Length: 177
Image 1 (cartoon, rainbow, N blue to C red):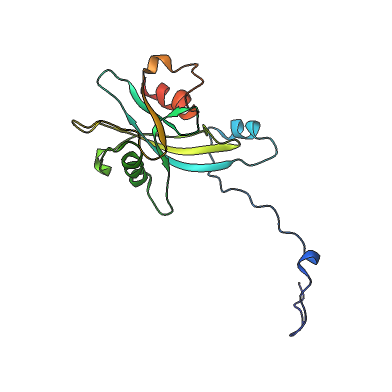
Image 2: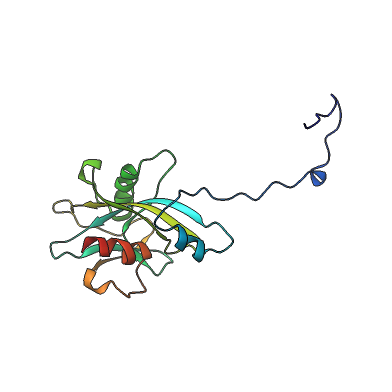
């Protein structure tokens, strides 16, 4: 049983207190990737970002990709969830902010959820919810916010491309086949 100090007694100086254990990032277990995650990050827990992304395809089956300013990897339109925000609401918001397209949650169709390495952050994984959505009629996606470049990806060229985010190259493109 721990003794409480007597009323009016002074607490030990902060340097005399036992140091707090290091904080670790919250992480949702992923049964399919647990071994790979442990092997990729020996002795430490990676940061995990929760994101939502949207996959737009043109009539030829090409996938709309974006490259953020200051980065080299192309990825799907999307980004991190705000506190308390659902994945579908985040997807709609990110599409509007990044490429100026207006969608509703009803336009989204769940493709799948994936666990992957982050494209631009070291020691970071992403827990992603990816949706399919039709391009709004007569709408043209335009680079906005932090987006430096848009490109349409032919899925047949994705394997082996080093300029694609791991989520897109290793999970989304194979799932669309």
